[in-house]
Image (cartoon, rainbow, N blue to C red; front, top):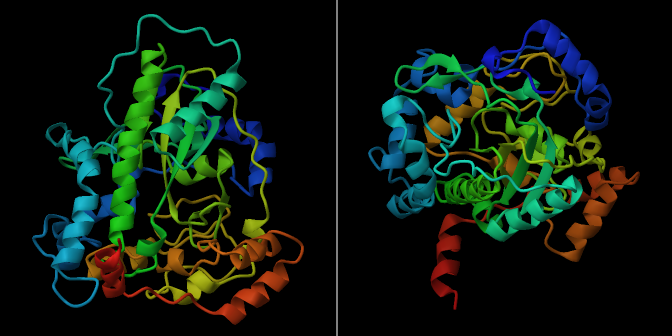
Length: 408
């Protein structure tokens, strides 16, 4: 269903109810429970956006956190947090930053608070697509050619689009509407470097985040340019426009975990997502949940390991911890304020919950056997085995640098 663009992207309660009914069967399959009281999330309330305008969040720590990405406040306080660690992290973000900074003068931080601008017009001559399924298979292969690790396709679901985005000059609300006629979303997954993830928490570990944002910025632009040259609309998007987690789940790439991340069979939560909105005729994927979410129902490893205690131990709930939580959807929800407060103190991102998640590590035959058990009726045995294994040992950042220097 594609609502007219003159709605400015904001759905009425009646439209929400209609969409809930339309997606009822797929929501049940995916474990979504979206109430009729649901309202779209306003991007202004996103935790990172609030850090720029909300005086209850802004602090010397948050200012230093953002400044560290320009080396203005990067601390020199030990292994994993020295100048080389911050320098490498910031270098990893460089390509993403080129895109996100080019719209500063008009208040559009591309890829984060606004979609990435199209540098290529839609071709006047449109190719004929006789077989959307074949076209979908080809698009997935091309996405992987450009560098994506996972690719799925789903229909546009405007429930999960931001009601508004923000003008980053003054953080006022502005409309968030897609071009009329956009019907599908191509969702791509970008796997993070496992050895760098093993060094969380550290500035060095942030390299794994920055590299994938830079990679996905290039990949979404390349694939969107290809589609536009075929004569169809294509909007390249990263963290902007819509919540990517519901789209990644709807596209069949993984299941929602207690740590607020998409747990993929291939990489666990060690992955970033980008998306392309298009009217190219495509076939949506049909997700087949493996039982990863059921494992999470009995595992609290991420919650126990979270330093600020921001992750939940109980059952999924519709409760919203604060305004940065998507409300009226039954799910596990973090206390984003506690989480980001810890990031601000570190001056870099923390993903301990990603590092300790047992689905992150699938490297040996034992890991593959464990995964087979965890996604079967023998998941209690997998829980027992993982408890015996304990928390994965953090890779010391200095050891990572030694490996780099000694690699031949």
